[in-house]
Image (tube, rainbow, N blue to C red; front, top):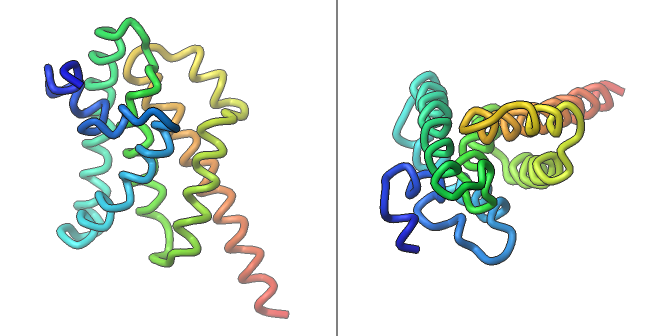
Length: 160
């Protein structure tokens, strides 16, 4: 716990301690994204919110890079800022409905854990903070792609 509070970068990378969960820290980090998103959505217009998520991504590259180096573990499981930021992006593009959000949560965790190509490739090739952040960005992309497909099927079927 002292490590998390020793530097702002560590505090951020571990999401104020959420990454210290003994069980499924990545899942806990993803869950933390929900209240953060709901609060930010109330405070900011859509353009500003997207800019904030972009800034969070850039800051995450820095924080996760420093923290991974300090731990001698470039993608330590306790660093969950990457899950939070990537899932914030997913929530940004979703309809504001619990079914979409729960579906996105399940899909995002699936892609983040299984790491289908090219996620695993980039996880191995990119190092430091950019590697930590980028693989979750790809998991977010896969999540949104699946949900867009689901939405198009639902819309298509509603016409018949």
